[in-house]
Image (cartoon, rainbow over all chains, first blue to last red; front, side):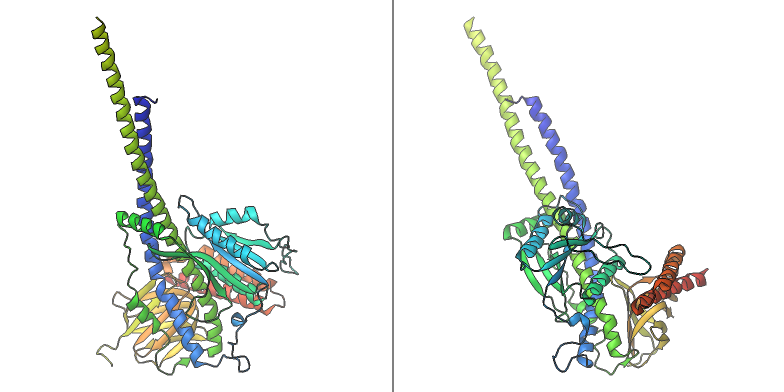
Length: 355
Length: 140
């Protein structure tokens, strides 16, 4: 049986751990609040782009008479033979099942697709890069020369990793995200890929989140989301997240954005005859990539918030577990001490009786 | 509905946040097909923005200049909304980086060959860099 001194040492060590997890939880809560704010302030732009696009599609003739489809390469639907999957995970661990859930959804998507389908992966975040790299070979590109741009080499497997972006989420900058979006759009227009999906953790509030696979290309409808698959979190997980948020002082409510959204919806949609500085079709061409980029950016801001929320929850559970452990160890230590005292008394008493 | 001062309401939005929201007397915009200045009562207009300066005149806390690259602006008689991909104050412009960007653009230009898309790309990079340098130079 462990003696009192050992137990006391263990309790001290668990107490230290508890302090660390508690601090990590508070840090995550602060980061979560900031990420939420950032997601909030990124909203007007995204809404405005969507609303002006929507009103342009209503005003100008960009529909093909024969097919009824929109006349833009990004609206062209092709049979999905080659698909791009953007996997947005976290950059760090200690966030509970956050990264595992995203990767699970990604693998589910990959395994669930038809056998002939070729899949390219863009990994955003260190965790997804590490896992994807271990599983799938990286695509090979020939070196770009003066005469010829770089050309992709032959495929080594059905699923290949075409690019990774570790650290993109640590400091979320629009320019980097927009560059990635531009790259994806280019590939789509060159018919290198027939569709693009993004896997990320959607985050409305701490108790309202899910992992979704969203289709970003080809565009079908402006202003909407096309969810290919989604996994809700279990009620138990959400309850725990809610508890963690409550103790860390993070609001559970989804912030009220109705007024701002309403305001943003007015952009470019006033009921007047606009003078279009550029031909509407050209405006449209310039707006579409912006729209895709802002969608991607939006997904990433949500994923960042979700990661911090997941870490906060995980650290809250860890803190609670540490407290429970301390309680049971203290009880055990007291029992051991009591037993030792009792034993000593018995020895003394029986010694005295023997006299 | 004209109020006494004939002030324009301006909202300046970037992908990250709402940068500026106030009333001004006039706004200069770097339109894709040429710069334009907007005063109160302008006809409704929608334009793409190129690379250049957005100048806000007569704002409550003084004039303001932002270097923007690419975006859109909506003009209504009493309201202007600017959507810019990227907006920098003159003080925030990194001249070295802009120079690097210019060099990169020139390199792209000379390597573009017959590809029209490559030329366009080079041109956007050059235009962005030149606009930044112009803004930065003016301030010193």
